[in-house]
Image (cartoon, rainbow, N blue to C red):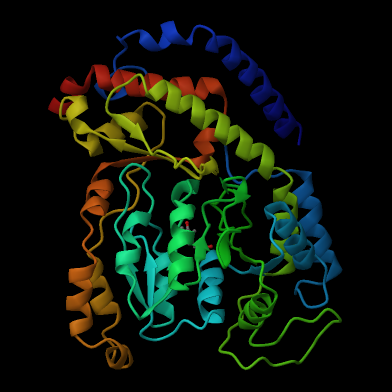
Length: 448
Ligand SMILES: *Cc1c(COP(=O)(O)O)cnc(C)c1O
């Protein structure tokens, strides 16, 4: 406990020091780095680690022990999951929240409650965590990919309408990295074509579009609380909706077709396909505790990300993902950039990332290009699937889903994770310094 408190004070002190440094930033940033990169035998810019994750203190201890000792580990008739659902709905500005045991099952439940099934088409981005796609395939529906916008890394909303056919049953925008899709354009197409929107907001806790929370703009909004996410409980998820009757269907779908009860255990079967995707009381209690820090952590990520973008602007060759004008708040689950090797003396991306990691700045290349056609064809190769999707389905799919921008993006991306943004301004200066060193010695690094 003492150690945790000290750490908090340390962070506050370091933040103040970072603010002081800020005044001399221009000079600091304009200097061409002469220090050698760590990969060439120099001293790494950073010795210490970034923020640990998940973050916890006595609030979590108390919450977990309370559930443990109460013996009420299951949500039926117990208070914790319901309390979390109520406070999450309130924080987000949604009428209903249904907690689930994961983000994937939140998506599966949304698609199921909206009646999406075999042979239906759902429009989605290829640049996403695979669960956006597998949740569609779970219902024997066909994911139809619309290419991405290289500037923002999000689905290119201008290309959605031409992908709509008479089989299209939903649009699934994914707010990748916590940045927000062009929701004005997406809502306009959905309205025009009479399609529901299932927002995959699994990376976008507290992100906003024109002041409204991501996950409250669509017909449903799905969240993940898997341990790497900005709000977490190991595993967990939630669905938001403003529609009363849909909320009842969502609840029944995740609860083996048993409808919601306000008076205890109710055997009211709703005639729907269903499963058990319920959240446990442990997860509910943990999330309520974790949620007390969400706003503050989001603000810190936001401030650090903005500062980092300012610093990186002065170094050619790294292009942070842009936000649409309507994105009034980014959740910064990922700090996503495109790397242009030609600005780094031809240094390949893999070597750039190795050099940045060696400076003590953990980074990765993000989602890798997948041969989606081969993947779909194989995954849907069972006799049952072939009755729904005959061979020609995949030929047509390949003609419709051409994804040159996605393929380019996968080759160029460099990511920093959300915990990198939880530290101080000085941390951001060190990240920029590491990039500057690599830039200055790029030709030498390319020879290694
Ligand atoms: C994490 C994630 C999911 C799936 O959530 P789980 O809780 O891991 O099942 C879905 N979509 C996106 C974009 C995600 O990042």
